[in-house]
Length: 372
Image (cartoon, rainbow, N blue to C red; front, side, top):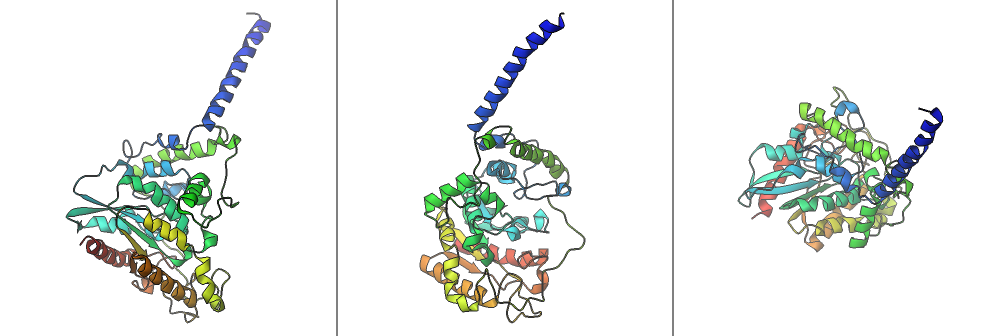
């Protein structure tokens, strides 16, 4: 064949390929991220995960991504058909609920499910929907995503460090779900700024296949790690040794730029509106739990309970939370001092399996009490 003619025939072929590539990328702009979740092999070929995917190391067979649909599609709840005898309990919260340094069976959900627990004449099945990072708005967003899974009860475990207004949009999973977050702000008339620069808006290019290649790759990597999760049950690294939570503390009474002299101002800096929205969202019984914290007896423990909390701020927070719970008729359980100092691991809110067992016992009682 004449080389010149071959080159001439190649030009329109390349042109057509370029046009098709452009059209495909433009079409991708109109696809919702939910379509990526349809790629999930979990709960069919692969086992569903016991907790939402989170992690940054390949040794954990896990990763952090921002596609909520893909995250939930990988979770065991997505493949769990609700049976008539099941009393479905959703656990919402931070890394303490997710279970940092705990195996899935050692977490609150795992321990609740270990022994048959009866509530309202049915068998309790708890689902771990905790997610690391501290933000009430992050938890409201996850709760909103979870409500279609037909819960019979929601238990929201939280702590003061999730309350500051300045923390609400800083969690990466919140910042990278701007459209969902703005919907929540509008629906519940929240004080958070829908135009806050923390929220990441995708450009037209970022919505194309080329621009979204990282998001697509993350979903595909999640499937790949799913094969290793299914084979091993490992979803985080369990180091033989780690730095224990601080016992000796700084002689400072600051909490997010406030001091004890600003105690009267603390309420204005906390996102009680987000908490109220989350507690009103489910149409089923909801329990608010002030989760256990480490109470230090080390240096400067007369000033601070732990690394996170000066005593004045935490005591005022507990007073405010109890006051609002009473006024709003919220189901509220304050377990702040339930667990001794020795049963915390690498943080003032992360429990050992034994500490988790103490928490599980109190939560189990509360579930049964609310069913009466």
